[in-house]
Length: 357
Image (cartoon, rainbow, N blue to C red; front, top):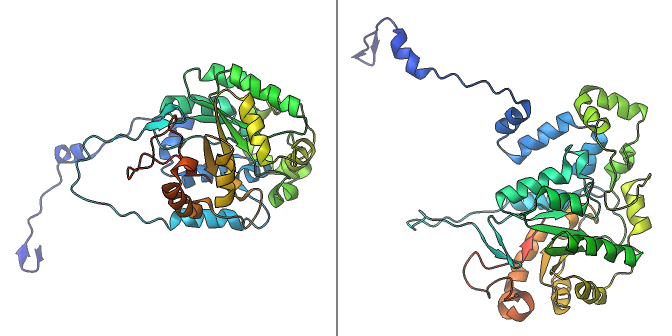
C-alpha cells in the first residue's frame, strides 16, 4: 500500500507484539472506593451525591437563599481566577503548610462547619474529623452538628479541632456547650455572626425539609431509587443535633427560635473572656466590620457570606480580599497576631485572613 509515494509494508499481526499494550485493571470490589476513584473533580462528587441522595437532603446541602444569586456569583469568582506562573524557580522542595492560630496546618485548607452532616454521609462529622486529621488540616464542628464534641474528639484525638458557635438566646447554655468543647480539646472557637435570623432557603421550603426528614408521598417516591440512603438513615442512630435538644420543625424555624439576634460587637469580648483558646469571627462581609472585630481582640476573621445561604446578593468574599490585604498592609496591628502568625511580608505563606464560601 502506498501513501504519498511511500510504500508501507504490512504483516500479519502477532499476539506477542500486542500483549505489552494490553493492561487489564485489577477488579475493584469496593463500590464506594470505585466511585471515589472515578471522581476526578468536586463536580463529579456532586453528581454522585445528587444521584444517590433524596432531593430534600441534597437541596439542603447544595442550595442557597432566595434566587441563589450570591452562590452563582461566588462560583463565577473562582472561575474567573487567573494564575500567573513564574518559571525557572527551584521547586524541588515545596512546603504547603505553616502555623495557623498557634498550631500547624499541612495544607491551606480546613473543613468548614456544616450542620446536619449525616444527611449526606452516614458517618457525618466522625468521618470528616478523621479525614481532616489524616490530612493535617483543621476540622470545624458546627453547633448544629450530628456528632457531639466528645464524639469528634474521640474520633480524631490528634487532629486540629475547631468548634463553631451559634449564640443562643439562652447564653448559659451556649457557654456550657463552649466549655464542653474546651474540655474536649478544641483549640479554636469560630463565632458565626451572620445568622441573626434564618435566610430564605426556598429549596427547603418547597421540599418541606424538616428535622428529622419528613416522610410524605413525594419524599417516598423520590426515595424509591435511593434505597441505600434510606437504609443508612433507618439502620443508624436517629438524625438529630447532637449538641442540642431534638427539634421537629424546619431548620429556618429552629434558627429563628433558638438563635440570639441581639448579638453585638461588645459580646465578642465577653465570649473571648470565657474561651481559653483562639477566637475567630466567621461571617465578615465588609472591611469596617473586619476592623471592628479585630479591635475587640479576636485572633482571626473568616470572610464569608455563608455560601449565599443567608442573604442573597451578599458580597462575594473573594472580592473582599484585595481591600483586606491593602488594609492589613497599612495597619498591621489590626490584622496580625504574632502568637499565631508572622507579621505581613511578601511571602505567600504569611496571610491568615482567608475567604470562605
